Amino acid sequence: MAEVKATIHGAVSLVNAIATGKGATLGIAAKVEATVKASDGHGIEIEVDNHNMSSRLISKVVEYTVPKKDLEKNKIQISLNSEIPTGYGLKSSSAISSVVSLACNKIFRSKFSDSQVLIPGVEASIATKVSITGAYDDACACYFGGTIVTDNYKRRIIKMQKTPTNLVAVVFVPKSRKRGNVKNLRNAKEVFEKAWNFAKDGDYWNAMVLNGLATSTILNSDPKIISNLVENGALGASVSGNGPAIAAIVKKDKTSNIKKVFSELEGKIFVSEINNKKADVHEL
Image (cartoon, rainbow, N blue to C red; front, side, top):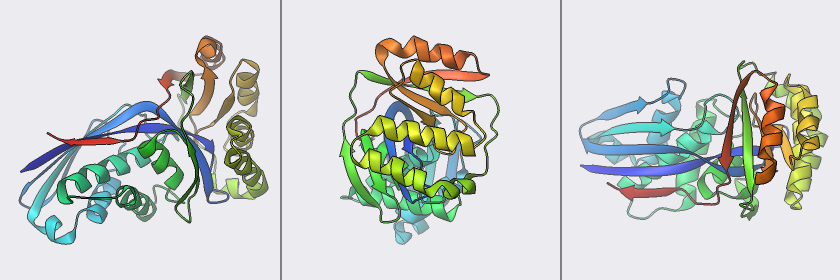
């Protein structure tokens, strides 16, 4: 029997990739842990601490990661633990699919590459309709940490750097899970193209604010919140992913101003440090 534990961190959006297929994301410290056991037998057993986690996605990742011959003669047990609220645009599905893939690679391959970890998760996200673009940007920020700009359709990292650690992410998770129609983001393609170009040039905060104003207008959030956050010291602020969570990146000493803006809204607030660490896996 083999047993491993893998840890990966979450991320927030700088630029939503749905309109153009190109995105930018920033890693945060909130984490997901997976313990995976393989023993003689057959089948995939999944135990999660949150019923919103998609077991279809997790099973598909296992099928895409584990070599067929190993899949036929092993019972694979997966237990997951997540600090990231699911279904709010905070990259939980990218973190979950990458952490499961990482653990499975560790058990069934003596050597494996970063793309052998990332691609099964991206493919499984498309196959189970969890993501439209496969969210390569999210998967990379969760897996590598730091600030990452990608072309999702070409599966290429265009720019990658460490995020300054004097910053924190203040995240607001609204009480209501309502989101607008994500496909409408494509109507504002030029705006997202412009935001992505800012990010590609390293101008991350303008990218994030432009993305925030555009996504909040389209996804039934209030763009005034984004302007309020910026006026209160946020370097960047945006709906994260397809929402409805909103993230603000801010210098640590301005955290309380941002919390104050969010505290007028109905929902929960959490503060997460920046993450620049790559995902980790070890045998138990």
